[in-house]
Image (tube, rainbow over all chains, first blue to last red):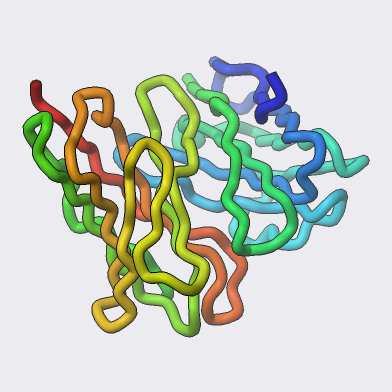
Length: 114
Length: 114
């Protein structure tokens, strides 16, 4: 399968711990997006990359959130010192360059902070 | 602020009847408009998009949407609903007003009754 994959699918952690999620996009896609989705809401944009460059990060929820895409392929999203309010589904999507292109989404990582 | 609204949390329709899922937007310039569908326990999937040209766009699974600039709407339609169409539907835009940040509506739950 050559779709977008995310790992892990589920993560349970204790408050104050750090977590890292991985996203593998479709290989020929230049753009990679991260979103947060909570129950009853649509995906909320967090950040995106064009190849290895992070072009927009002002929507990251706090300085505890960071993302990387070191070689323009896979990406990681890290949340430091997790809080219960961070519990949500974290989605990754990829697309070719161009704002008119649709995005291809991964299955998401469900984070539960106890 | 630029936004997209889905005024109905839930739409109920009988199988075989036509369905409409509403979306309105508030965006300066000419945004690109999208519909995505999310089936239970699966990632979001692209349905269709409006970029330019014909106001009626056709997409996957028999869905279509009509772009109406004067009413700033992009309603999703299907002539004959199937039980398998039951899912969560999201309207989204990208571009417009110089912003490249994708923005999603909160979603509409479509329930098709046998």
